[in-house]
Amino acid sequence: MGLLRRPLIDMPVETDCHTPLLPKQDESVPNALLVDNHTTVNGKVDIVLDIAPEDDSENEIEDSNGTQVEDSSSFDEDAEIDEDKREINASVGSVTPIQTDELRGLYSFLGVQPPLGPPPTIDPFRNHTEVMDSVYEWIKAIVCFPLVIVRLLLIIIITGGGILIAKLLLLGWDEKVVPMPKWRRKIVYITRILARLVLFCCGYHWIRRVGKPVKREVAPVVVSNHISFIDPIFFFFELFPSFVSSAAHSELPGIGMIIKPMQVINVERSSAESKKYALKEIKNRAMSNEFPHVMVFPEGTTTNGKALIFFQLGAFMPGLPVQPVVLRYPYVHFDNSWGRTSILKLVWRMLSQLHNFMEVEYLPVIYPTSREKDHPALFAKKVKRVMAKALNVPSTSHSYSDLILSTKLKEPKNDDFASYMVEMAKMEKLFHITTRESAVLLEKFQALDTNCSGRLTESQFLDALDLPKTTISQQIFGFFNKEDEGSISFREFLAGSAFILKHPSFGMMCKVSFEFCDFRKQGFLSRVEIERSLRLVFPELTSTQVQKFEKKLDVDGDGIINWDDFRDFLHKYPELLALFLPSSSG
Image (cartoon, rainbow, N blue to C red):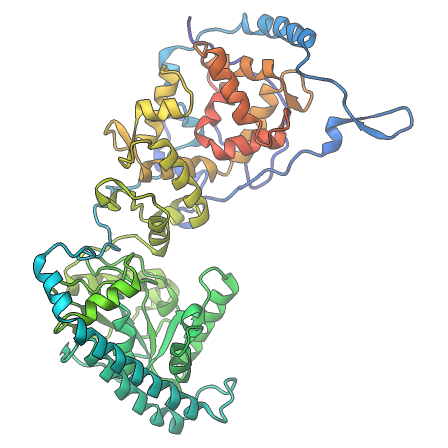
């Protein structure tokens, strides 16, 4: 049976002013220009998450008393189904087959998907010695167990002393009075000595330094890569700066009291207001010589030091000179990086080492140009490039969101987390997709990836979506298979899904699809209407496959497929949007 062309229909569609219907792609227009037709500044796609549901009154009728009641029409009555089939068959019989060349670019109506570049091969959150796989390490752990106990007791005693001193220091001080008087800050020097003792107990008996920190007047902002929980303890001793830190750290028993004299700038990751406040405080403190250095870890999380991930812009927003610092933790048997590793396991392994190594290199101060002052992203990029060169590591677009996604993974085959690293900072910039939305797509991808290989073959992809193997279904698979390796990675799956979901016309196209499928114009879809729409594209569909589609479309399970169900279905399966749209060719 030949493939069928959907009949073109002329229907008025109310669209939002932010979701214009994209013009048909002109082959004479460069792809870059076509991308600009549906993107905003910096290549960020406008977000249209949902279309407001139609007024429910459109699906209601009034009785003789003017009271609104539900339409009593039943779409599943046998007689009505037979009548629908006759009517639909008459219309289907007049459609013409689609030519092969018309099938190319099934999603061309969306424009051109922004290129992702080569896939990342680095997992910046992997601890390379998480598993003790050598006899030497096990013997050392057993022999050094008494040393671990002694060190742990000393750390507890020292920390307790620090808490007591901090409490005495803060007596009579109003937190709202900022900055803290200098005489109080001088007393805090005692706690800085205690911090160095903690480092000594952790095995950092000596710390190699290259270069020197400059005075606050020269560079009020200090930035560093972030590898371990040891980093802030070192800078607490070395610089005693005002840290920019997660608000959760200030809630930790004991630790919150010790860092309080530093007047830490707390940030709630999930709060936009908190982030605005933090940016304001960073700028205010950086511009006032009454405060110490402002210390920022621009990566926003810890990594294994094998790459520099995406830099957040807070440290660069003031447009003031910055001194970069790079940290290294050379090792043979114990990787001190804190990525996905349990903190308790990390502490135990660290305390069982006779000696741990740490290197600190203070780089020359970097001054922003006038253009970089106006564009903090350029300043951040320059600083990151200098730090990456000093560390001799690559610069990537991974972010804290990648770490969050990796914690939601089922255990991947061969512990291959790198294949799920998508560089979320790049994804957020290109598609405006959130971490929460990405987590939903990750869950969906893992459900499709039945053998936990980290990639979807064509057969896996089509079987999971209940699609027959046809030219059109292969085009759907090909839309995601950008790397042309015969299988789809999570990165490709996320990018393809996000491109459709976040397209400025996605909501409008969902509406057009629903109205096209709603052949009888009743505001809901009957079984026959669904079957008719699917068979226009896939004449090969079996009755069982059609029933599976009906079940998926009935999202709320009430037996009626209305606009809300249809919209929610396409939000869950955006890759199937093209199946329900009227043909735009010919």
